[in-house]
Amino acid sequence: MVIEVAKGQAEHAILKGVEVPRPSSGSYVYTDISPDVTVLLYSGIKGDMMPHTWVRENKETKGRVFYTRYDAKELATNEVVRKIFLRGIAWALNRK
Image (cartoon, rainbow, N blue to C red; front, side, top):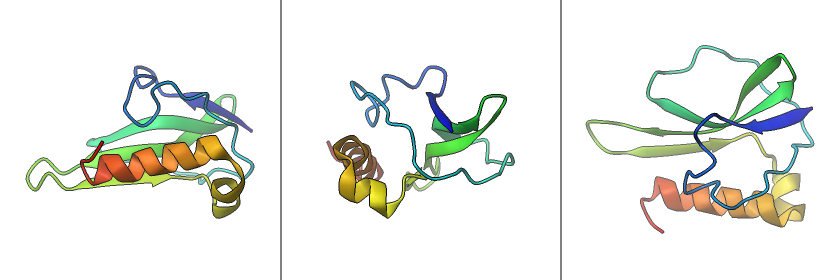
């Protein structure tokens, strides 16, 4: 299992300055994502990468969504995963 930063997303507020850790759990298999989703991280096997961490903003309501595939064990044991998660929540709440 590998993880990659999506093209052009290394400077996104959630990922900026973070060395992205490899996930310990598998990926969901899905390829049909909404056009207003911005994928930040992809994970999987080279040649078969799936969205791992993404954000979405509703253009009309400005409501925000943050999603990550990192699991609860990774949140509890990995400081960088916690940083990504907390930054994602802050982004969704439109906070710094």
